[in-house]
Image 1 (spheres, rainbow, N blue to C red):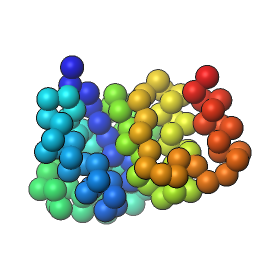
Image 2 (cartoon, rainbow, N blue to C red):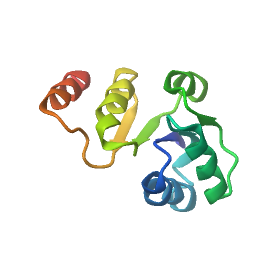
Image 3 (cartoon, rainbow, N blue to C red):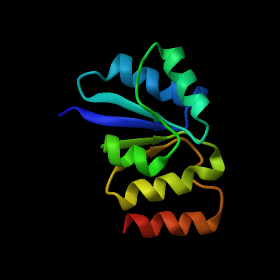
Length: 116
């Protein structure tokens, strides 16, 4: 089964550590379906760098509704990781996050609660 993957945070880590391997090495199991970033220019740059024409979003809820991804790869600013992890888990999505997954004890507890 091929799963739809979105990159949440379209900076260099999102592009080079996750998006490129998804496109180049995991074609049989995953398809890169969109880029999300609060800064829409970063998503457009990600498309240009990778020579793709994927949908780009700066509205997380709209991206989730229109793409309905199976997997979120969170590579946004460290202080926002927990926010997107929790939103993904609440929608029963598989969520991978670069480190750190969160930056406060409160975020640890919120993520733990979202997993339950």
